[in-house]
Image 1 (tube, rainbow, N blue to C red):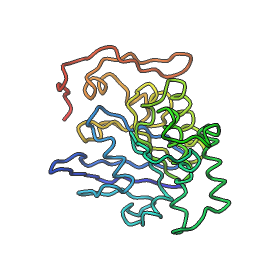
Image 2 (cartoon, rainbow, N blue to C red):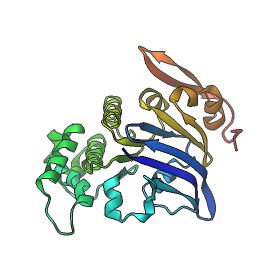
Image 3 (spheres, rainbow, N blue to C red):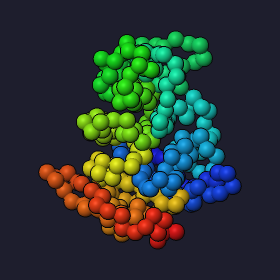
Length: 266
């Protein structure tokens, strides 16, 4: 069991506040979606959670210890992170790239042990990329490459998994497959923090949503309590249809509810 605590977190970048006093606590076995319009601070929050950004005030802690107190290897064993839009420059095979997810577990210049190889195999199976094992990653399609990168994050077998915008390069079928995978990871005991733009996927798969707007946490709760007309209008400037189809939650944007920049929340 792991607890991730975000406590009065403020992040300043370039002389301005990007996040203002964010508070949230998350535990193992949850799929938590972070949503909000462009520029809301979602990716900044992901980078702060993974220790890549120093807070101006407040902190992020794992089981009570500030994430910045851990060595990079120790933190890498606790939090696996897949940033958005990651480009692969080296012509590695998919299997070799997935194996890089085991680096936090290895001593410098050491070879992978049997446990590491087994972790790589499990990650490749969960991401369904066994057929890509010997393919060069730079020659894969965007969707195939995205799945390989997900497998690399899974190979760390960290108790916390942070994934930023993983659906962008995937077709609808693979989007559903990836969200099923994230749901399965949470049900297996991992704390999954997922940055999303797709409100329908957030409504259907997430246990809990954090809605950010202009760097502030506007709402925190189950999808039904967060994806309500008031928040959709004030934060996204949209009017949307919400309901269920075949028992699945659906959010369908219909139109802009006000001119861009007219959001009321500050």
